[in-house]
Length: 432
Length: 168
Image 1 (cartoon, rainbow over the protein chains, first blue to last red):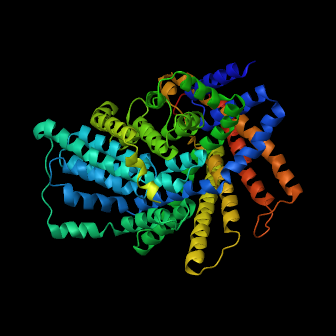
Image 2 (image 1 turned 60 degrees about the vertical axis):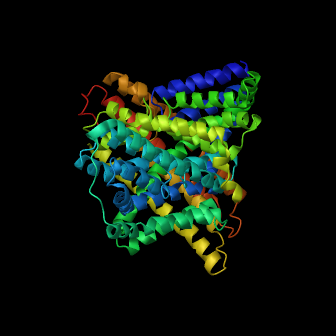
Image 3 (image 1 turned 30 degrees about the vertical axis):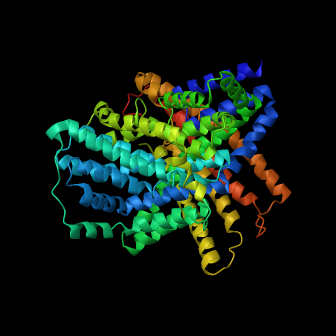
């Protein structure tokens, strides 16, 4: 059997297994080992099982994943998300659509201490949804703004997906984090403009909140010190070269716990629950990583990355057209796979192409994360939409997807901007 | 829920709990290492190696508990469109492949632990033997294999039981 047939067959079997609901990591691992065994020998293939998974789970650079997850979980459990929302609300709530604007701003703030989109969406939905319901906001705007705001979680540092991209491509995770900052702030700004436009076209359907006095505003702002402290400590520490990303993750998680305990918001029981939740989420991510790394050996032996690179370069479309083709393919793949799985599966194949096209790997990390973000809020598998649907049972999936549509359009515009002007992404990490 | 389910649930909760405590230790070690270095200008020998070894244990144990609770990330798109009987068959098929994968992993890892023990590998700074950490991590994978086998057998036995009455 030729390498090419086995490679194509491997991908076909992989997608069949995924559709049959075999866990993603298991499907990738089995195809990886099976394909490697077919093309090489079964002894070396099984030896990969002896060596690779244990190496993956004891890789110190990946240790930041559970600790950043823990930081977000603790921040959420200790009520920091509620404080953020109240502060954002105090400043923006009196505008028409102000609660949706406050939601997006609070999502951005929460993303600064939480590296996961789904967690950001779930956390903010619990806080913001009842408030928007109480003020009679259209359910499309209420749920759409949370689903879109949640996507900021993977862009604004710390970002679990960017960290894994960094480990896979051997890029500096600190620079990747910093590179996500300006696009993240741009995303908040553009989402706020989107709400404004929505409100203008929605006519009188979106009410305004009563205005808050400056004294109340400053009082609300005082409560967000914990999040600001954590963010500047962790991300500032990385930017200033004080900590490695893994150390920053440990400091952030421990810092969040200490702050919560000092503020009497966390006892042993709640801390244990946070640890439990964090390790459960981590186990899911690592299962995919274990499978993906095994699948990577199969890709290497079939020379798939080189062949895909040659194929795409052979099309002679030019760098940007090829990039658009890649991004379009990723959006399509987002219809089947979740964001993390997409990055882990496709980066080994696409990364050499992107390097060969002459793009900056840090910039591409941000661009690809923004592209998979789209999959979180677009049908049929929009994880953020699913999460909000479980918390707002009375709003159908279709209505949430409708509500999120204007934000998807904004995302596409933002993506185009960052592709056209890479310096928006790169200027800040280049100052490190 | 039958007695069998309750027992496995209890063990899975213990395994999960232990993994959570390992995560707490890893976080504490990382935090202490940074504080010692920056505040007291002191090294914390061994924290790096012990952290990553414990990470391995925590993750393998976490994977086992998640396997029992069916929490591993899957694609539900086609599954949701299937009739209930086909869904059950797909679930058994998925568990079977999961068990094959984890069984092979447990088998190969067992011999790897033995090789590491034989070679006398130790951590860099404190010369702590590595194999006990790998052996404890292996226990998680072995447990994962056993719970998957148990779940497959249970699913086959209760295959004809109407949905809602069947166990997990």
